[in-house]
Image (cartoon, rainbow, N blue to C red; front, side):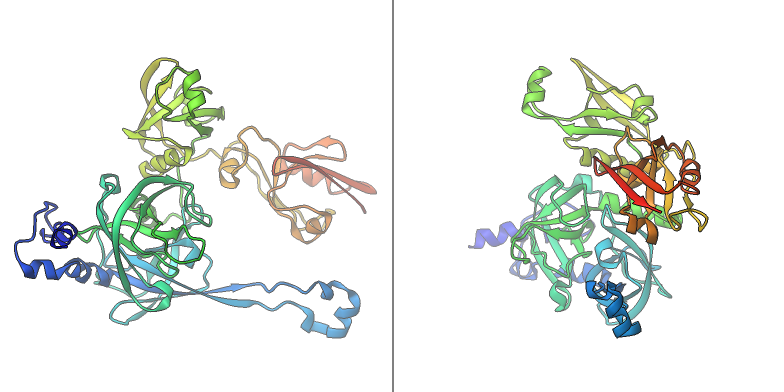
Length: 460
C-alpha cells in the first residue's frame, strides 16, 4: 500500500518550476497529495452560465387556416430560453477565456463566475463549431489568475493529469487520473472532430470547457466530451490539445472574425493493411491521397493522387484529422515539412499553409422580389466555398446558402447544389437570377443533395 502511495505522488513533490521527479522524502510531502497544484491552478478555472434563445417548434395544426383563424396570433411559436452550464479556463490576466463552442457558441448572454464568486459578463470573440472551441472576453476584468499553456506534443501516455471543472453544476471539482491515450481522432461526440488527448480522470456533464492540467499546473488541454452509454464518466474522456488552443488565442488576439485553418484541398484515407501490402510496405502507416484539387497547396508542391503522407513537421499522421490538426497548429502563412512516400521513394517537401482561394469570385446574392424565389441565398462554388461547406473537391455549380421562405416550400434545402434549371446548365449566381426572373409556367430544378441527384418541379 505504501509503495502505491509513493508511485502516485512521486511527481508531485517536485518544484512546479522544475519538471524533475523524485520520491517524497517525508510523510508531510506524501500527505500534501495534489493540494499544491490544485491551489495554484484552480483559481484560473471558471464556471460559465450561458443563455441560449431558440425558436419554438411550430405545432403542425397551426399550418391549417382554420386553426390559424381560431387561435389568432397565439398560433405563432414562441422563442424558448435554454440555459447551458459549463466551465472555462482563463488564459490571460486581461480576461481571455477558452471554453467549448457547444457551451457558449450560440449564447445570447454569458456570465462567468470565478472561484472567489465574482461575476462578469463575457462575449464570444472567436468560435469554431468544428473544433468545439470558443474564446471569450470577460468584460472589465484585469489581473485575473490564468494558466500557462504547455506544449501538448510533449505529453506522454501515463502522465498524471487533473481535470478541473463544474460537473453537474455542483461547484468546482477536481478529479485525478492519467493520460491514457494520444492522437484519438474521430472519438469525440457532437460536432468536434480532430485530434484529442484521452484521459481516465473523471469528466462529467458540466466539465465541458474545463482544464486538464499536468502536475506542474500547466494546461494540457480543454475537456470536451466523454465516451459513455449512461451519460456519466466511465473513465474515457477527451480533451482538445493545448497547442490548438494556442492558435485560437493567437487569432483571437489578431481580431479574426472566425477561425481560419489552412486549406488542404485534398481528400485522404488512413493506410490499411491491404493498401500497405499492395505498396510493399511493412507497416500500415500514413494517409493515402485519394483526391486532390488543382489549386491545393499540396498539388502546387508536387503531390499526386496515390502519394502517402507519413509525417507533418516530424509528427506522424495516420488519419486525415491528424493531418488537419497539424496544419491548424502551424497556422496560415507558415510552411510545414511533409514527408511523402511515392512508390519506394521517401522525400520531404515544403508545403505552404494557405487559406482557400476565393477565386473565381463566389458572388453571393439573395434573390429579390422580381424573381419566383425571393429570399433564396446563393453562392458560386470555389475553393473557399468548398472548404466552408465541406463539399466534394470536384463539385461545381452554385450552392444554396439560404433556401428562403418560398425556396423551402419548393423543397430546397441549405447546402443543395443547383446545376440545371429548366434544362439549362447553371454556372454562376447571375445565371440563376436570370433563369428565375421569368422562368415560364413550370420550374424544374436539378440539384445535388448529399451526393444524390434530386429533381424538384413546381408550377407558377
